[in-house]
Image (tube, rainbow over all chains, first blue to last red; front, side):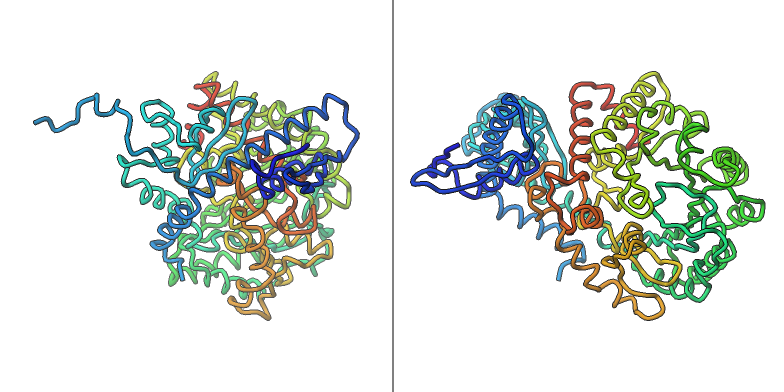
Length: 93
Length: 486
């Protein structure tokens, strides 16, 4: 599978690959303007199961991309809320 | 001039747009996603709504917008208190951390007259006094118990069979009560016993000192006696007789029971539940077997995999739900623990489902020989020769040495789920736990690879089922709300 570096980050692909690691080991290799992901299944699968796993991986990549967008917008707020929560707990520094 | 804005004011699109608040999402099925805010409140939305939300294309006049706003997934110029309210909810969820250790387990003897093949404790035969805790060791352990800042202290006596060393239980209870006259804690005692050795002396003492009893009941007579062999083959008869006798003296709610699932239990979830109802319990904890102690030696743990256990669990859960719909209140306690996290502002303090992990900081174990362990499972690993979770010894180490030991701090820090791979972006993480002991026992490190973790497989499957039930069946949601607010 080839993913355009214009669209997806290496980090996004790594996270998606990790989530699939019970089913397949996924090689990730940059190649020009693409990142090539090669799935090596841990057990022999039927053609139908292979298609399913590939679809699941692609969907996982989209999910991880969405998570990256959320993280970019909300990380500072998440830390601020945690700081606010702990500032009144007696547990901070 | 009216005190209220006209209805049309709420129907107009907001011009300034909205800002996302921190949230996580996980796929529920082919169509829907579960979204959780920072405090673990959740809602189910479809994929297109999720995409629109993240791209800031969600119309402010839609129903989804208001739902997401009320769950603190987004905020706008019209909701100025969202961040402070969310911080308050996060603080409420984590409030137990400040209390520190509340559950203190005393292993008063490793001796036991049962010989259960799944036993997690590595029992000794019942004539070896060398495996009993001494009063000197217990006194040292009690000093540590009362060093805990927790306003509530629960001392639970475990074994082996703790009633084989009842004089020590008596000693600990009396001494703890004396110490508590000054300490003024909310003090509670529990004896985890198979009830086979229950007698009037024990019951009179329990009544006088408000001691609770927790026992094991694995199901109908043939299954219980198969799982829990003892001389005479009468474990079931003794347990049931003990339950009723203890209730007569102590009161109905002072005796609880736990079951353990073995391979023989797997096709019999409904019979096991029927047995609990027959014995007058209003709930059951459908437990999986743990990968420790004799369960490993006798290969009981590997005898069935997590998929089979989940089939057993869901069959039991469906049966319990049917029963509740027919008007009989009966709860499944593991689901109740998770649902409490999902549907209330509070955490139950159940050690396996805490992050930071509950080891040491929620519960701690004082073994018969004075060794202190971060958890009961950590003690079981030590019985198998691995002392990774040994924190010190009551005779040699001070409170600070034990609770600041690297053997405690390292697994706590490394396993923290909010920063663990895959957990950090999992929508179910607020309802899950770190469980470094399980992952160390099964995968050799405190974090574990979650895609291959039986703990993760089990928890994800149960959470998905509970949410699906609530989404598809209003009655199920009402029943679950009764379980968490009995």
